[in-house]
Image (cartoon, rainbow, N blue to C red; front, side, top):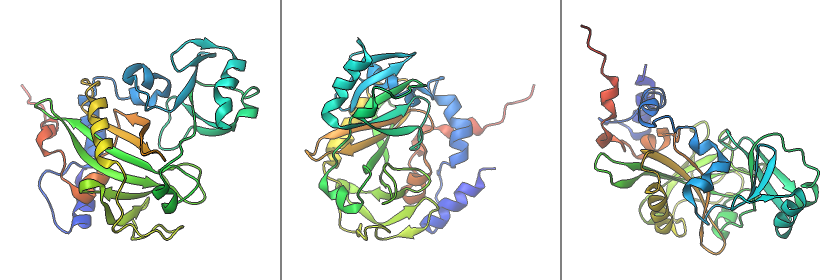
Length: 289
């Protein structure tokens, strides 16, 4: 059942390596065993600031059970909501229970007063990304995905990092069309990127930006930020952090995923990354009496 992902990893790296984590084994077997029922917590965009309490979140306000709240969770009127958003011209609305670029809407502040809010959601200000990422592709914010894990000794470490880029035709990164590039030491981008269907490329297909030789600005700062955030979540063993580096070289937290954060890309390009976690014990069949 789990061999196909091992075939993928071996094809990517040219040989088999003991200790790889098949992606379907991770999601079907591991995640339910390690997340303590908290897997969906990261999907609640309106809940992130309650847990993490960080200014790195670009949250402006929240819509919860038909009411509006500012980022300190004080109830505000729709008119006050408009004043919070007005300095930014436009905002992004992200619904609870969504991910992978789905459930997002871009809205002009002028249309905010009459917008029909049907579900709980967070309202976020736009992020002005670092100029390097504008050179890679315009129109969407490049997402730095760093996955961290709490090991058996309680220490938090990085288990994979990649840069996720959108296409020229999209306003944000979508899983179905994204381009991913592995990030190595000191934030160096790998020379080879991969499209959503795993086709390889050495330059962005829309802009022609060549990845070899490029470095993610403030990568070490981003790693340390993820470690500090994960330390606030000792109940969650693995977290995927989606970050942006803005034009002032500050780290902004777009969202986080404490459940199905995914392991396949890091396992395919640089794994195995989870050999020390002991998850193979979940494959043991129960002993019959």
